[in-house]
Image (cartoon, rainbow, N blue to C red):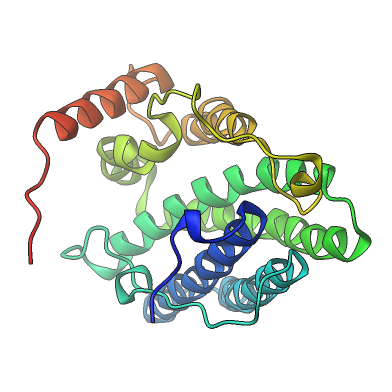
Length: 256
């Protein structure tokens, strides 16, 4: 069983089927984070909130699959590669620092998701489509708040200096999707009927994510004292671009 390629489904179906897979994988990652938080003995409130996060992500996967079907998709399984179901970053670090990485990445992702789902909701037409997207959007606000609260809880436990030293060199990797320069000239456009299923113009999609990452998310790290002096969003974006150019010039050989 394999996941379909984008050209094999109409965009309104592919978008939501892929979202169902993304949300399912997010549930697995949050489950792993929850286990680490148990090991660290964090507050019961934090554990309860993270438990809700896991449940929400499962619900979002189901809601996304329902949106795929509302867009005309046939019932089908959603195969998810094992590598998407576990945290791969900083595998050799201790549990507490893996938690820091997971919490920071979660804060970035959930913050960026909010304006994207707000735009999806603005475009959604049929009431049954709007209801499902609205539920996801409401939950994303809770997820964002939890992620930043967890960053704060870990900062209180570990100290600002230690957190800053861990976070700053990882920022280009964490922001690589959102601050990477990209050409939007050849992005697909959608019909009004497709937009009514909660799709958004691809140019708008990337612009929303980049603006949120640069102007909102990065600023939250700075406000917490978690970014070294002289490291700005422009500095991080330049490093993201440099790494992308280097990767393009020296592609990793295919294996297998």
